[in-house]
Image (cartoon, rainbow, N blue to C red):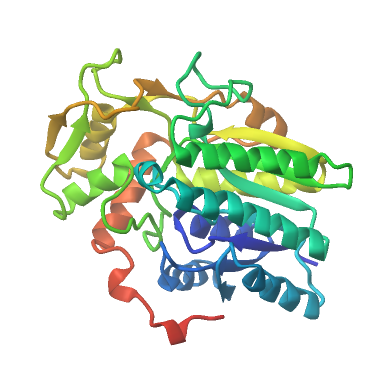
Length: 354
């Protein structure tokens, strides 16, 4: 029998790409999403790519009744979940500074509510969507998993606190497994061009800005700081293809079935790329021009951040395979084919499969 997984926040950017990889590796995912920062059209497109129907529940991760409805349905069908992948949560650093209580309530509170539901229904395996922001200002690079945890913003702290909760939960000696994946900077899209990153309003990350300038939605790319101690003065980050990242979740689920306790792994390439290097790589790979303007540094930004990826390779058997060119070409295929994201294809509420 195929392993049955609950995927919270499965309609989002990383969630949809992970659904594709899960299905292609023989898993049966069920999605719980409130569609606050996503669209049911993304699920329809995953079904199109995979040729598989996906069961979707519309609900809030913080709602015990919504969670009970999903778990009760699974129990009634005799197919309780073998594991959970937990993507659901708020994710904008700047917004977390302005609305910290909302972020703690949603991200930490949602994790607590989910773990309580898992305990009630006897589900003992979870893979958690964490972030490299838990490390904070680097005391050494590359970041390894033993780097001190010291976030510099509320969003990072919600991830760090959730990790601690998961560690304490997993270490109770009851056969529980919690695998936390600390993402670096996911970019790109599925090679089909049918699913990709669709930020609401102003993007929080660099790559959607680049593609939106290239497609004509924005006049120029703002580059914040050109006087860092880096190869060209602009910030350096570790960019990883979202499909590689999705494959990492498959490996993490499989790892969780054969391990107990708490584990944390970096998911990145181990290589740093500057803002201007990424911009130039995009222009060369796509032949699309991206105008840029330099702006002052943003408070809290650091010069460079990139991962040590040895532990993921040794323990999960995972490493990133796709190049910066792959990321740029696939990301541009998505953006140029869907200049307004999923907006033009949004389904009405009564079309959602709940």
